[in-house]
Image 1: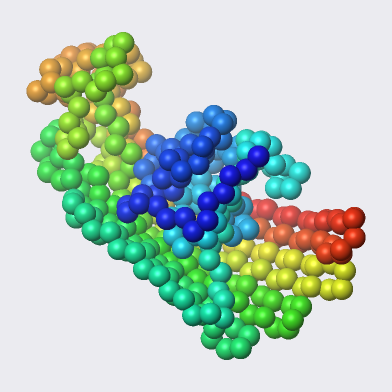
Image 2: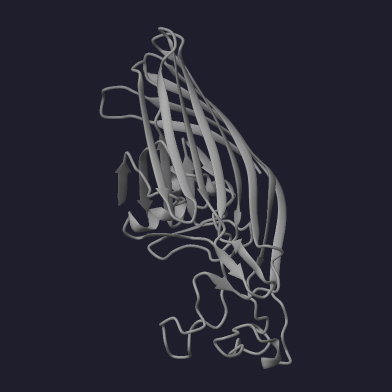
Length: 343
């Protein structure tokens, strides 16, 4: 069973987690803000927030598997089609597909000139722009380039440190492009590349905003205020790029396809105060931290232990896929292939 969306657009400022509201049975969440999303299909997924943890939902972008959760967070823009295949997909897509796959296809170059643009302006300093342009460069060469910038100012005060507008903002810039060369009627080359630079805030964890036995926010919750004693500013930064070359060679009775890709995360750092400013989450059961006028109150417990996590990571991924597929008109067709993966 599968679902698909064509010509997808997400609302201004949304990241890849915005898919959750568009596809039944698909849920996307993250404890690292706009990076390292975790995918679930029909409730099957992996809640492990370790950046090296494998997930049972595979993400494929422009025919390249994105195994690491950081690679899975690349922003969605200029997307032509999204497919969600539910259930095990190992026969065609290999490992880590026991729950299913989510497959993204960007708009590719054509000889026809076309362009599009989208601008969102809102409060909290929100300015988001998305645009793309493409067309023929020569009779056999065409190209397309797309850009995205998403911006929001910090708006959450940290009353523990006394700093106003300390958290909640982000600046996420990305670009991707493709060159299509139809060398002959039977031989074509598609070269793609992308780049991303994110400087934002990790997930906003809050302590003691529910009373026991209730699922309603209590008086400790203030959207614009936290009481954090850790997290080092709660940053989430990432810089990444990738390159892919696809070659299609159509012969009389079969097609040979080669897909070579290199993905690189060369600057990623994050840190967060995951106890929400009250550090007895594990040692004393996360009891009330104090009156509503000061939700952070270490004197409420002699067992306060700060839970402050962070990481720096460098990673790269190389994949090589070779396929041989028949294209006859008869009742019998076949496909064989080879896949190499190095992370």
